[in-house]
Image (cartoon, rainbow, N blue to C red; front, side, top):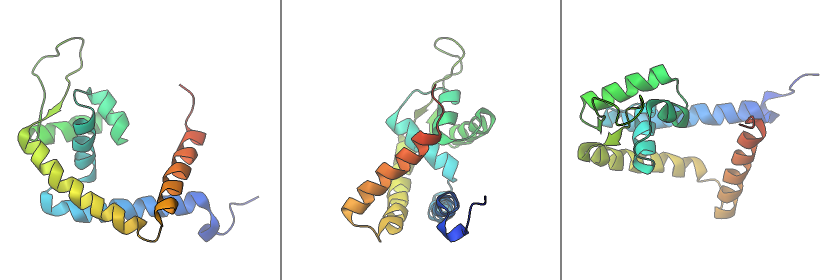
Length: 145
């Protein structure tokens, strides 16, 4: 048994949409000198300050090693701050600087425009249904922890 026609395959179409979204976000964020992982890191930190490197990596869908590079780059640019030593354990919790919050505000507006463009074909009810259905797809494939 095969997947069947790609234009009718949910997995293929989901990957196509995700790739198109990432490309549009990269284009929108380029003038702010931010990558998608950098923007995602800022966004997650604004909503959940003080996360460790490992927690951020999971939230942004990158490896811990990649997140370390993302954080170091954001820190070098003054957008994120991390303590020199861990307050407890080994985790170095990261927080946004005022400049980081300012850059995030601009970036969030651009990303919101991309999302609005992506969702333009849907009614409000259709948007809510899509969000629900996408969450259900992710939940169906996420192993119990």
